[in-house]
Length: 295
Image 1 (cartoon, rainbow, N blue to C red):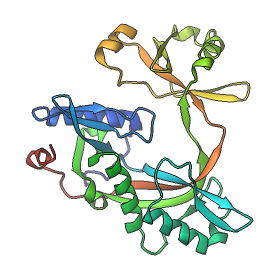
Image 2: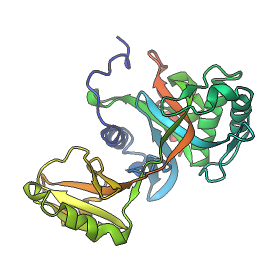
Image 3: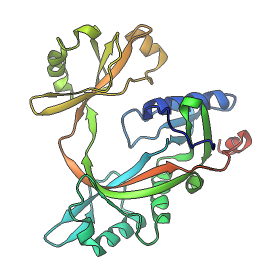
Image 4: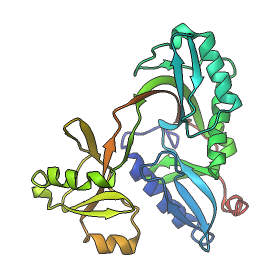
C-alpha cells in the first residue's frame, strides 16, 4: 500500500496543520523555525518559515480532498453572461478569464448551478489552467513549498509549489456556498456571553477578548457547535492550539480548552472552487539539502 492510499483514520484540517508544523519543527529545527498562522482565515498562508525571527517564505499544508482556492463569479441573467466579481480578494488573471469565457460559451449548463454545483473539469486546457491559478495564488502569498501526508501516522512529504501537479490531482466546480464565518464584532460580545451564560454551565466556561476575538475557555471539550440568536447564526471554532505558550498559560490551565466564537454569514455566493486530491504514488519529497536552498 502506498503512502497515501489509506485515510481511514482521519484528522480535522486544523489538527493536520498543527501536526505539519510539529513535523517541520522537528525535522528542520537546525535550520529554521515554523510558525502556524492560518487559523480560521482561508486567505492566510498556513505556516511561516522563520530564520532568527525573519520570515523567509511560507509553506502551505494540504491534506487529501482539500479546497485550495476559489473566486466569485456573478451571473447577469438578463444578459446571459457570467463575470468576475470585483469583490474577490484575488485579482483577475488569464486563468480566470479563460474559465469564465468557457462558462459563457456553455451558459445553460452553468446557470443556476446551485449548491450541488457543476464540474469544470471538461473545459479545454484543464487541468493545467487550474494548476496555474492555484500556484499563482499561493506564490503571490509568499508560498514556496507545500506539505502533505498522513498526520495520524506521522508521515509527511515536503515539495516545491511548482511541482504541485506531481503530488495532487485537481478539480474545479462552479457552485453556491455560504460565505463562511468571521470574528465577532465587539458590540456583539456581551450579547453572546449573556446567551451562553446558562447553556455552558457544565463546561465551567469563562471568556476572554483578544485581538478583537471572543474566546471561550472550558474544562470540557466542545465539538463544533452551531447556535442562533434570533436570526444571527454563530459557531464554536475548532479548538485553538496556536495561542503562544505564555499567553495560553495566562489564559487557561493544563487540560482546559480554548475556542473562538464566530459569526456565520447569511449570504451565499457562486464560486469557482478548486479542490486537490493526493495522488496514490507521488514522488519523494525534498531532502534537507534542497530545503536549505530555499533559505
